[in-house]
Image (cartoon, rainbow, N blue to C red):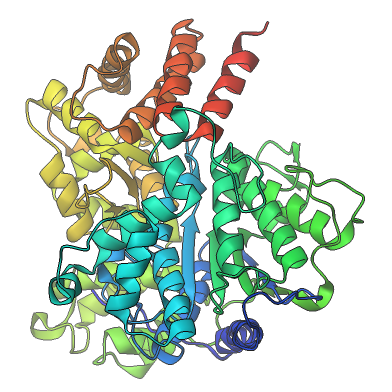
Length: 596
């Protein structure tokens, strides 16, 4: 299924503002030589906010598409990214990039997961970042030396301590790719030393100014400063674009709030050519009331932005202690997407060219200008060829099909997604429901084991179909890093939860158990890993950390002392995988939960 066309006069105006912000930062980068002291900040921070479904992430990714098609002449980044997917990740896979070319910018997309255990988003995104830091450094060296890529690449590898001298340049040219760029990244960058767990033995490494690197954020900031601070001899001379997607969820991921605070402060002090994009729900930008009418504080990232904009340099920041006043009004852009898209007709017409004009107008009107709702309507239409003349989706709807689509469009978006969920095959639906018991992020191996224990079968292949055919989940197919997958967005895990809550699973799936039986199967697995974290030998440290975090949640909910053991194992696991912030959070939870 192709994604909906980006459209709407108001959204085009918003995209123009983003492009202008990027161009301002890019012009500053291109006009600055390495080793230059910049007196004034050149960064831009853009806050894109609205409630759910109004296209915050889509707008940010439309900027990505514009940059890759209009500001990337050597096609380093994949410019067709996302065109064949209903919902895409905010960072393209490393293997889709062209490492034989020069990047004109570095893009780092970080999506904070929903749910109680989002993990350390910055840490989880390091492997995405490292190859592009290496490519940016290589590009800067090539521009400075005037030499070809192969010779400069060989020297860069040698500087990083990677011996490739025995290979001819022709062989080296064939070897240049993601794997080699990762190797150099791991060897050359301080953050790579953390990922490689080098800090577990001996003293922590030092950054360029001689300060100890004790955390992931320390390492990231040190490396970014080396490449994007104009005063550095390694200044890359290109913009850094960082997207923090769903920033309201950083309340459960303190490391991301620390990172954003330090990123804004450092880019202001050192003159980085940074474009920071933040997507956020509108309500959480200020104090708000929840469903029980209890007042809630504004989000952690909102606190960071408020401090950077409105406090004095003497006022320490809320998460890292950075002084305020680091974000001037002229460098801050707020885009409120609360206004619905003013014309979604081209998006629907692009999907179904045979629809009558009056049908298009009716569906668009019923969508309320909400592109996410229209996307879900279109997705269900794609799954129902019987609604179209001659079963051909390029033709018009039949009379019965038109009635069905207009009735569908009258529903709330949650109900449309629930109907889409019910359209999945029983096997896929069962696997998705089992995964939802673990939350928005889940360990595929655990879902597979739950299916084996309760149903005598397996779930992995069905989850893979849930990704490839229905796009309800992501990262099941990619096992290059770990066995952690996630629901593609909040709407989909909520649909699974509603399917369970309203008894639809018992009604439509054979031998579906009571909820208590289902959680008992999960708790048995979690108790096994609490007893011995290495009991499931196929799990990586990443998988184990997520399982132990879930085990701690479940045991704390039950009031069990075993939560303490789960958290103690989690501290060790986070340290083992080079995530000191994660270890600190687990230790803090242990103290908070058992101090009394």
